[in-house]
Amino acid sequence: MTLRTRIALLVAAVVTVVVAAVGISVHRSAETELVEEVDIELLGRARAVPGLGGRGNRVLSAIDDWGEFQRGVTLQTFARLLNGDGIVLLNLGGEFEAPTSADVLMAADDGPDLVTGSIDGDRARVVTVRMEGGGYLQIARSLAEIDQSLADLRSRILLIGSLAVVGAGLAAWLLAARTASPIMRLTAAAEAVAETGDLDHPVDGAGGDEVGRLASSFNAMLGALSLSKRQQHQLVMDASHELRTPLTSLRTNVDLLQGGADISPDVQADILGDIDAELGELSDLVAELVDLAADVRTDEQLSLVTLPELAAPVIERARRRTGREITLTSTGAVPLEARPDAVSRAIRNLIDNAAKFSSDDSPIEIVIDGGSLTVNDAGPGIPEDERDLVWERFHRVEATRTLPGSGLGLAIVRQVVDAHGGAVTVADSPTGGAAVGFSIPTIDG
Image (cartoon, rainbow, N blue to C red):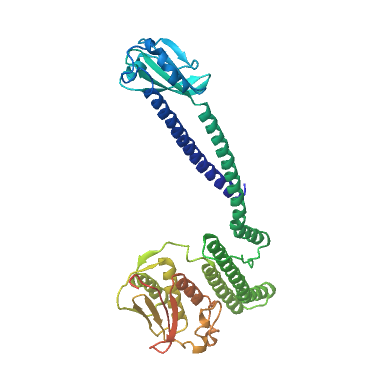
């Protein structure tokens, strides 16, 4: 069942319930008012009966005084006299059915008592009154006309209600088409993306309502997916280019070993050393490519940490691995929400870069100020015209291109920092090299 059909049926169902409730209420109110009018008429006739109010002492002795009352008895109104035991003594106008039990007679002793009876199978209202001379009088009024009027009213309610339900359903059907139109466009766009894989299918949608916001969100999602796809394609292209060089070198060295039986042991050792170095660089490149391709926003949950507690173990491992002098200066531990492993990886990459591009006897200084971390080295530095480019994948500064490395370390740092809503920085170091770092928003802003 389509959304348009569901909306139309829902509106029709709601209107049906409302019409039914209103119709029942109107019918009951009309019935109550009409029956009350009949009851008032019956009570008025009962008060005009001879033998009430001191006009007679016995029922049968005053029979000649009933002429005036009999003239008021019509085809719709009947009367009968009862003795004290409820036995019918005389019918005026015709017979009718009405309760004559002791309870009804006892109630009439205290005043006129109204009950429901029947005349020729039709509903009737009956009033029972006590005569002064003894016995009781019952006056009946048929409700056939009222029942017919109520039947006509029910027919009108059904007719008008049916028209209202059909009209509401049709209106909802037409309005639902307009409401569902953007959703149908969304569906068509999603199907086109699934079928073709082409993400450049924006959906027309405007306005601040839910459907308009849905269309805007869908377009934003398509834009993000398209950007991610382009970035992945670029990463694959760049990676294939970077992988080609070490693989070519490895193939050349392997060919030399396979085809050169007269190669001296010293040359073979050099070739094997080159192969080992190329394999090491290739392993590092693959590992960094995997890290760069991973979504750091979903790898782990956010935790409340400080930069000094994340930097300390990374610095200690770097000291053991490189044997370099690495110092840490912190002006305070300010809490921030971060993904500890990702931020630790960013810090490690910055320290590795500083160790790689500066001499072994120069110190590496790390400065932490709240949510900012800067690594100072004594290397060749980074020219101003390349400070924005060093964060790009596989970009390497001209002065360091002969050194080993993949050119992905700082790209990973920027990816981690961007995922935390921070910013990367490059400046001149007080020690004569480069000052590379980042800042991440803290809890206190």
